[in-house]
Image (cartoon, rainbow, N blue to C red; front, side, top):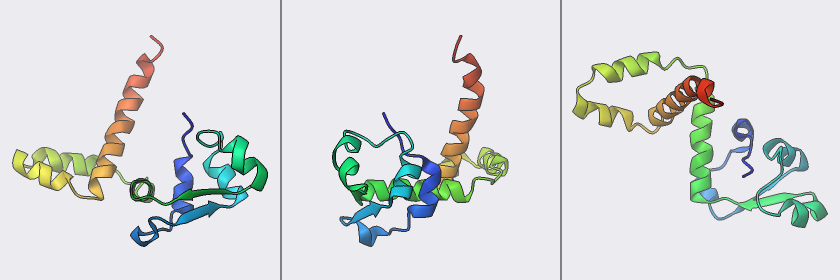
Length: 126
């Protein structure tokens, strides 16, 4: 499975809900930045090979993913320990409401994922 480089979305994701259904055409440079290992399917061997342009439709789900990635990137250096400590002190019924914040949730999820990855990585080859 080929995944795009998420660090590039901060630079190219300047779209809003009003762009859903339209197409975005990546420049050759942006295409090479985002899809360092090639694109999905057989797009490389087909259209891109002949026109040196990569166009995809902006869809609601893709736009949402791009926006979540942008939230994570914009807060990349934020120390999440204070948030975890605050959550631990909240009563159970208030935790869910607090965590369901559209900015805080992706940051917590990303922090937890990175923590798990860092601590499980050492056991990967055992």
